[in-house]
Image (cartoon, rainbow, N blue to C red; front, side, top):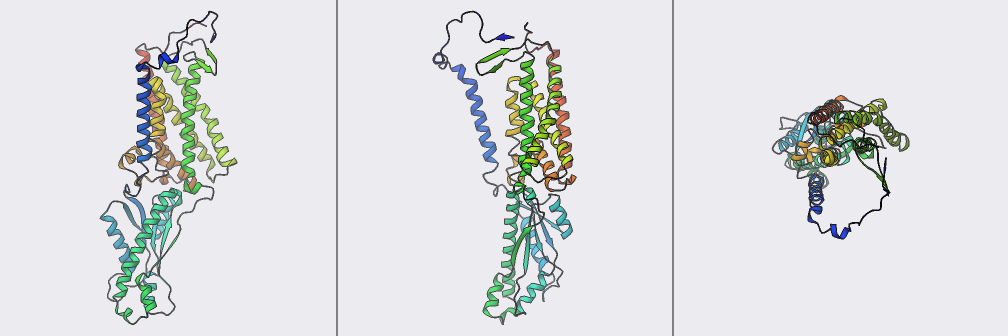
Length: 429
């Protein structure tokens, strides 16, 4: 091991003031820092500034459970008329994907995270509207808005606002019809005022989640912990192994050392780093679950499944980091930061719905890992670990990620080894 304090007397030292005037010294860090800052600004702010303007086919269930007979002079009951009008309005635009479902289908869609909410016309809707002009005791007809907090507070809130606006517009349209009805002509002023906006809207949770779920954000932050665990752990293993094998200097405060260089190929070094990453991920995954669930009390079920998915997710990210570092060398950490963090966070769809982000982020979500992993975690935490709630896709993408990391990393290091591109000339102790 060599020391930072050699026995010979050091020569004249270069002063920082002389070096700072060298343009070439500034060039690379200035260009890279500027590009990273610009890219991060566009990525993070571009995805969240205009969710309403970027809205594209947000899935919402539209349920007509009305069993009443049509009013005199009409061929369809009011539930059918209202849902037809809302669906027709949505079909002329692309911001909402109204999915016409029966009550059982709507509940299943909420329970599997396929819709952000639902607008329900109850069974007695037409009958309760007809009673407005005939009964002295006035009970306002009601439309029900169902929320789905498991898909995130923002997405659920957006769907609730859309549903409430649609219900209010339906109420005003129905009020105009009732005002023109002959049965309303003899009604008193109070009744006529009521009939201008006859429908009330109630909002309730369609698929409840636990109180300790961060209003539907615990899945996102838990997934972020898994990705950061794999990313940071992978980089720590990478630097730690390089230091231990003598391919990088160890510097802690004023103490500097270098170990004797171990003669090992790039491929074997990568295999070592990947094995260590997979082993250390067992501990980091366990500690994350202990901290979040046992100590902090996060609501979670299916704990064996959650641990297995968490471990595989963390390991997949760590293996990807090792492959990228092996292929790109010194800038590998920057490349993997963009792959697993910078591009992944705004395209995850876990805080802002993908349907409320620009098309570029929806494209990224097809292959960026955090979207796939957060869908799997969300399925386990909120949707009873249902495969169709995102868990199956999460497992598939983990498998794809592991295969790609192994294939890419081993192919690149094997190519470098065959070309004789050694990392360093071995140095004696």
